[in-house]
Length: 101
Ligand SMILES: [Zn+2]
Ligand SMILES: [Zn+2]
Image (cartoon, rainbow, N blue to C red; front, side):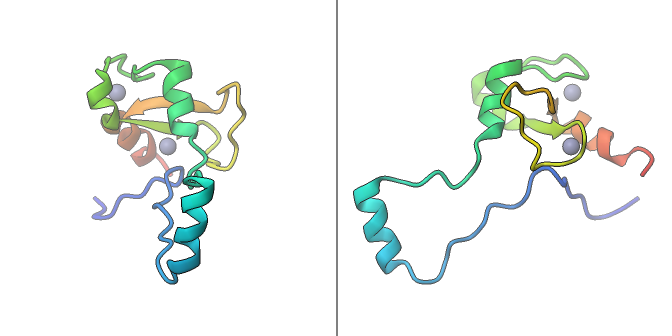
């Protein structure tokens, strides 16, 4: 049993701390820049709020319990047709990564 879990396909949000002065000004005029690729939202929209494994359905307010699993394990591989994505609930996602290697 391992104490630490990590999903290789969900990197921690990059912290843009540091100098906020000019960046804030720029954001004010250009609007917020998309920090994330947004594949999670895309995948949820494509495949629906359903776990691909246990077929459990989730209400939009519970969508945080659904995660996007990358079938090939490469979170940088995000084809727009969603062929590398699989919506898994956190339990199934955990299971998916804890089996074998
Ligand atoms: Zn599930
Ligand atoms: Zn995964």
